[in-house]
Image (cartoon, rainbow, N blue to C red):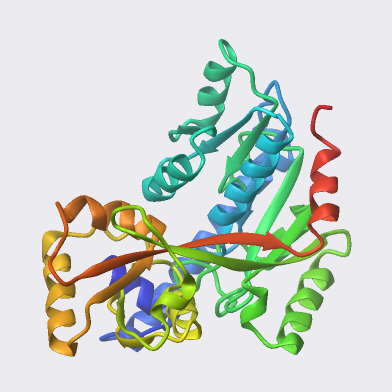
Length: 344
């Protein structure tokens, strides 16, 4: 059902009775708009007030539903803060548990606190622990916590969807909400033509003249095998592979693997946060056999769940997990802007 809904609002795949449902989605979007505006009004008029945490808060969020590169930016920021000797605490809702596990695995020094009540979670943590800075994950629409800097990530390949609010489109708020943001990071900027990138930045600046815009790209590092061995990116060149992913933007991952020179014989993909089953693993193995391939490539967050289902080595099959990191252009300027609110 989730996959049907995702395909319906994104248009990634044609769905049954989609045109019939469109008027009802438009009505639902209008009601969603009223709800968004009402909630914002309560905070603007200070009927509801955000709480203040005992350390600076950097919020990283988005204005669309998923696939904007928010998690890689969170990782990059946590790594930078750790290198500066600062104690950073990541506050997440806990809905994207696979992302939380990836961050904890890649950055064992990071303190990740998951849970719906992020304000009380942060305050409880601060009673007995030191925090130099809180990172509010998916925080752009979370008004309960006062933040010092608001960062919005925007996917260059699909910056605003069809321009409509959920559930008729992918927008979580009207575009003029970008006026609340201090910084916009245009991710996957290397995957679109230069002119298209200029158009996106111009659109953002037209909405908010004060927002600072940075471009970012995903830097490919290496593949990791199921046993943890590192393999060079060139390993898949000219080899027949099956790509498996459950992302908000599966097309970007498929294109990335193709750009490495691999011959993708099949690319089964699912909606973001898909819960893999043994049936899914069986399907992948059947696809490998059908196309006479023996390599499966996937993402770090997908491997968290897939790896748990694969109890041991499977004869003749290699699983490769792609390691990527987000790099912000003019990163010194970017981190200097964040440093203005940090201690020391």
